[in-house]
Length: 354
Image (cartoon, helix red, strand yellow):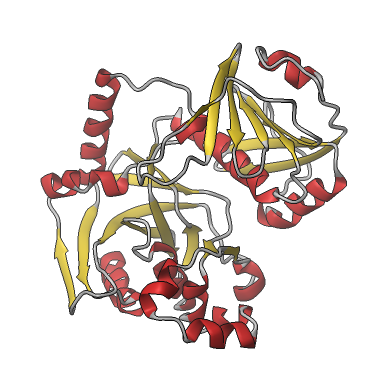
């Protein structure tokens, strides 16, 4: 495929994508266009709760093209805060931004109302899923929502968010809460907006993607591991087990039944997990607004390389003020001590009963 990369228009016009799939989540209609039946069918299975017979007006359009991407040059790697090797490189083009996924070679482009990805997406379908979610989030953020680095669960329409550093056990804890009858809202990203006297929360339509340690220590999900794999994992030292990066999707509705996943809820509380596997005991304390703002680096999230909008100093100040108003509308607690996902269940139940 030989196409100029200086204009997103020329790239988009070169795609032949005769197959379509209409989705809808968070009030955002999405139309996926592709040239591969395997991609369309895979997304239809993945997004089954949100498939619509006919899309809404003016949908967000995402094109997923199974093809060799064009040759790439002039891309700048995006440094990661943890110092690990870059996952993406970017290049601004007329009309939007190009993002190159370095591990897979998939090339993506984003514009205000559409996006595309071209590469081996049959093999790397999850990258198409992530692009759809990213663009959905961008539109919701345009309504005034904030993005939290948090999981969330709900009961009777009321939700609790779970935030913390990577590896704090957000996904593990959320899955233990689902085991106790909560509905799943979101795995690692949560869109929130203070409105009136409440807080609207919208989740990502994305199956939880978890490491083997999460599956091994769950009362039901451990069955997703092969028996031999379970024994090998149990033999690992705990610290090594929890660092093991071998993520897999968990289709919650196939395990717990239809309706397990809900995207919208009224957020009542935020739990900040600062516990550690080598911690001692279990501590729970309520945070005031000042203490919550001090935790902001653990809580806030952005769209990373896929958002070319420049964050000025003024916009950063406005964002802090927005988080401050958000925290005033929530009960915020810190849970410290030793990592213990089942112990969160009564804590969350008390927060929702308050």
